[in-house]
Length: 330
Ligand SMILES: O=C(NC1CCCCC1)N[C@H]1[C@H](O)[C@@H](N2CCCCC2)[C@@H]2OC[C@H]1O2
Image (cartoon, rainbow, N blue to C red; front, side, top):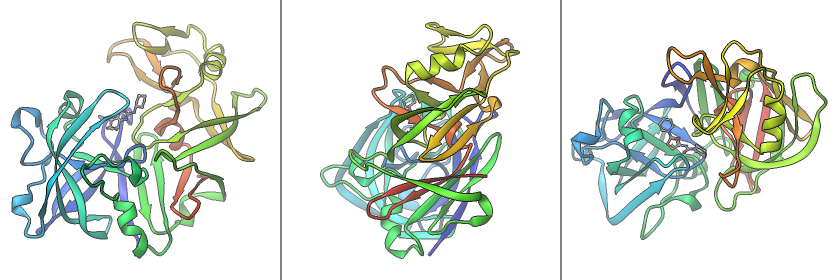
């Protein structure tokens, strides 16, 4: 089996990407954020208090003839940005891009935090991390990818996220039309459950490449790129008027500044993030101060290769044993 679906930016600065999925019988279509940084599949639902729902589509298990309550099971998740949700669990038929999993655990939200309520075009998440991170108790549940794997033509899914444009997620096959040259793979450490791997180094603009093993997670659910402070300060040293603002919680700079590109290594391959991706957003609609797409990871305890980096490549998440991650230019 295979599947292929769109990855649609939910706003004009690509804060997140959503993908249409169907749940139940007859199919209910929701727009979910496919997140390789977590492993819960949860949705706004008919059980979510109405004062926490602001325009989202909801899953109504009672309207699906194939839904089953997973009785006695609950879940509760907290994300790195402080957002979170909790609820109860059903199983139901679930498809992404024509790929169906029967009896997928669908976690129905009984409560969501305010940042989810405020994102009206995001109806929930599909966790594509390793199932060890799943928060359902007393028995944890498998991700959509883990459930689909036995039926996939190839044990992979790919992410082709785009800057200010719609990209795609493919399951079960690698579309050679979506990238150029070769795919460079590197090993993944799957414990504790993230797609954890290393970069082989970096360079700023036309500067020399600094070989250095930088461990982190490839996380489609994180908007920005978070790297060690030494790398980030070296980058913004090249930006006129840049400063690390306590007030804005990160590096800001005059929107008119010229930014250098940022290149990261995967083994022997090199991937260059255009300056435009790092000129992330104005701090407010009328401001001439801009917030950077590259920020420091100090305080996070982990480096995060989020969408700002991933959208510069075609990325293969390979569920082989051992798992691997592959990058190609596009
Ligand atoms: O918390 C993180 N990442 C952290 C960012 C700060 C540094 C540590 C990692 N990712 C979340 C993201 O923010 C959420 N958000 C929802 C609203 C639209 C924007 C996305 C979405 O829900 C879970 C996941 O994706």
